[in-house]
Image (cartoon, rainbow, N blue to C red; front, top):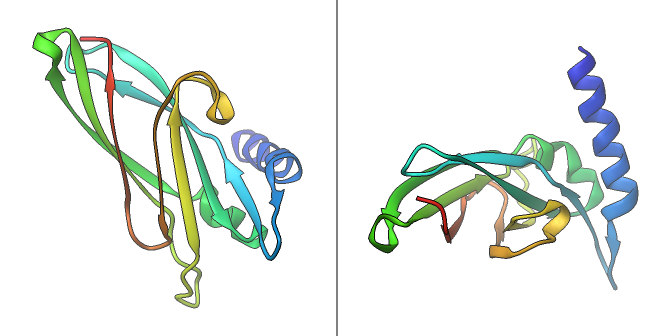
Length: 133
């Protein structure tokens, strides 16, 4: 219960702080950290800045699912990562624009590893290399 309240509080802060105004739409964003276990078994934190057009979609952004696959790269000195993020559609089946950025720091800071756009209900795929075996 406490964990859910903390997540809700963080979501509200993110909604207040990271919704950006545009000419015709606002975006909401959520920034979970994912521990990617490299091909050598080392956990590396990767931040996912997941966003959606329309602040009303924040609960769906928070509910986004992610999965990843790793394989050795760089002669065994690096790890190739393919990470997928899926933001669900609205309950009425409605689709909306989505985006995701993977980085080494929170809120897209540090090194940007990859970024892509998409639509809800369809997985967005990020591909990047971690310089960790």
